[in-house]
Length: 339
Ligand SMILES: Cc1cc2nc3c(=O)[nH]c(=O)nc-3n(C[C@H](O)[C@H](O)[C@H](O)COP(=O)(O)O)c2cc1C
Image 1 (tube, helix red, strand yellow):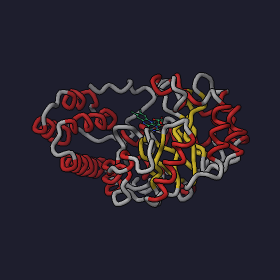
Image 2 (cartoon, helix red, strand yellow):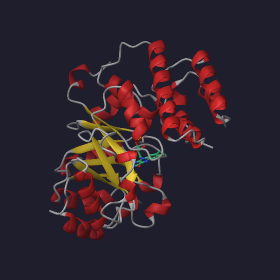
Image 3 (cartoon, helix red, strand yellow):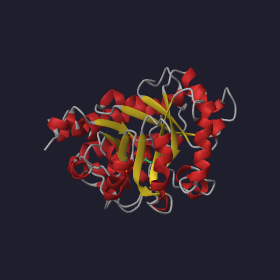
C-alpha cells in the first residue's frame, strides 16, 4: 500500500555515492524522476587553500547544481579545512555543508576520518569548539552508529546536541561492517529520545515494503536517506511518496531507458569520449541490474563491455529482451562486483 497519508510529510534524500551520484547523475536524475527533496555530493577532500582547485569543478559548480537542495560533503577531521570548505561553498550559494563520519574504508578510517573518527570523542569535541561560530553555512553530519561498536554513538550524542547541527543523518551500521549485514533499526530507534536535532535515518530502504517496516519502528522520524535501493530502482522515492505508483512496468522501463541513455550521452560529451565512462556506467548497472527480471543475464551482457559499440549493443539487448521489475535490491543481494 502506498503511504498516502504520510507521503506529503516524507522528506527524502539521495545518499552520496563516490563514483556514481556525481553532478551528471544528479542532473539527469532530476530530469526523469521525482520524489527526492535533498541531494548530497560525494565527499570532497584536500581543501588546502582558499581557492581550492577541487572546488572549481563541475561537481560543485552552482550553474550545474541546484544550490538550494544540494549539500556539498567533506571528509575531514581538520576544523580549519572544514571552515575553508564552508566559506567557499557559501561563496557559491550553498547554505549547508555535510561532514562525512561514515566512510568505512580502512585507508580512511585508520587516519581518524569517516567512521574512523567516531571513537575519538575528544578530537571531535575540540574540532567542534573551533567550528562553533566560525562556519559560513549550516552544518550537518552523516555518521554511523560507531566504527567498532554501536555504543560509540552514545558518547557522541551530547556533543552533537551541543552543536547547532542542521541535521544528523545516521546510517545504522558500524564502520567495520562496511556495507554488509543488516542495518540495525532497533539500535537506531534507541537513540531517538537522546537526539535533540533533526534526525535522518539511512540504511537498507530497498522497497515500499521494507520502508514501511522500518517506518513503523521509528516513530517521529520524517526524513529518510535512500542509498543502494534508489540506485537499483530510481522510482523508489516517487513510489514511497505515492507519485509514480500508477506507472506500468513497460512505462518504467522506457523511462529508465531514456534516463540511462541521457546519462551516458552526457558523460560522453563531458569526458570527451573517454572509455573510462564505461566503468562509470557499469557501476550503475551493478545496482540497476537487480531491478530487471534476469539480473545475471544482464550482468553477463554488461560486464564484458569494453567499447562504446559493445555497450550500445548490450543496452539494445537489455531493453528489448528483459523486463523491468523494480525494487530489486535486497539484503540478500550479493556484494557489488564491478570489474
Ligand atoms: C560505492 C559507495 C560509495 C559511497 N560514497 C559515499 C560518499 O561519498 N559519502 C557518504 O556519505 N556515503 C557514501 N556511501 C554510503 C551511502 O551513501 C549510504 O549511506 C549507504 O549505502 C547505506 O545506505 P543503503 O543501505 O540504503 O545503501 C557510499 C556507498 C557505496 C556503496
